[in-house]
Length: 255
Image: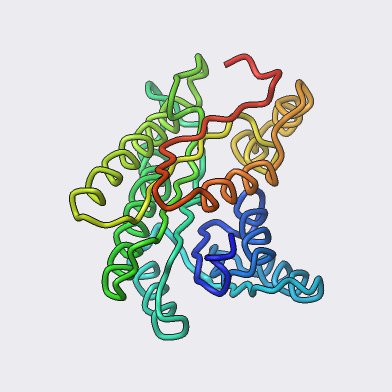
């Protein structure tokens, strides 16, 4: 990770869970990390924690609604003005709403598409343009996907969510091909976790918190730091190594 020391990483959805763990880990590795979310209070607290811990990097909180393209573009402009540009983009932000295919609300579908697919694609495009503008040839774009992007579980509430994650699988491979055709050495990687103990299930099952708690108590889940460790593994790979997808599940998870 030494080659990343002092360089700039963008982590979306950095206020809680996996995003917060990734942001903290990259700051510990000496990177300048722009952590964005709609609510930055938790990122501000994490930034103070990182500073007081004596980490060699810095965490820069940034308020951004990823469902609004103008917010994303303003964020990239601010990063350019203050930090030259993005060297690593971690597209972590994502959400699941309990909207089935047969009775789901269109608004819920649109929200999932806006964040899970379109925001990821916009951040990817803007990160690439930032790298290209500065002749950065060793950047990295990492999409935090899901095992739901590789198989469909028989739970109606998450079928549309799964479709958005299948899109992330396709987008990551398409990105790899386009980066290669552009004759760059910028790499694209997908990390696809199974069940991770975060706020995810509590948000998905907001009307039934007992159901959410049961999701995490039924087995020994992955932890957010496990995903952060996978990010470090990916970024630490030699420049000639292209890691396409890491699929990781709790040992006890069935599918």
